Length: 73
Image (cartoon, rainbow, N blue to C red; front, top):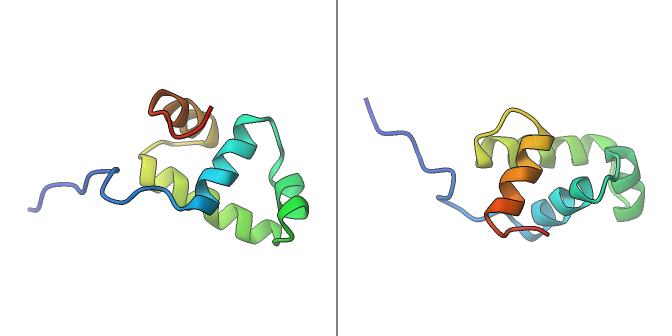
């Protein structure tokens, strides 16, 4: 059995950081999608990747972890 991969094995992409910061600012996924000219499904995919990368169950926990890690403000 191999050891679990660290959630910090790769940094968040610039787009993922932007989407995480938008969530921290209280923006809904649909609002972020409209502002960035992306589909809501694309935003959902980015958020899912953020959750997996940070090893958290939801976007609220991702925001908290992002703030603690200094990824977002």
